[in-house]
Length: 77
Image 1 (cartoon, rainbow, N blue to C red):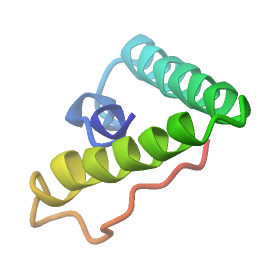
Image 2 (cartoon, rainbow, N blue to C red):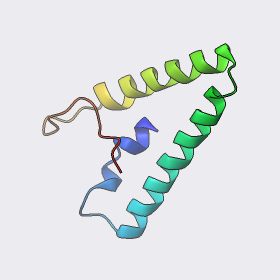
Image 3 (spheres, rainbow, N blue to C red):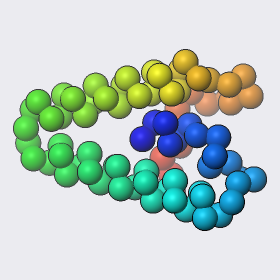
Image 4 (cartoon, one colour):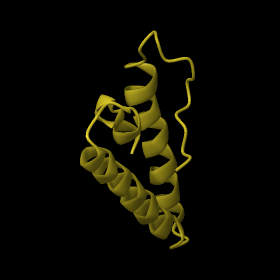
């Protein structure tokens, strides 16, 4: 999800179909994580949180471009 959130392919200059596809994949992954966490399995919950943290670090912190002001990408639709 973090890879898609920080992808340069989803900029305002890109194709509308590509942006729609990326948004659809982000929503799909979000729902899959939500359903997994709702299973009330503590192992799945811990792995989901750890995965989001690692993803944010790899795709957000390590690949941060100087022109981006915010560390946290917007999850708004």
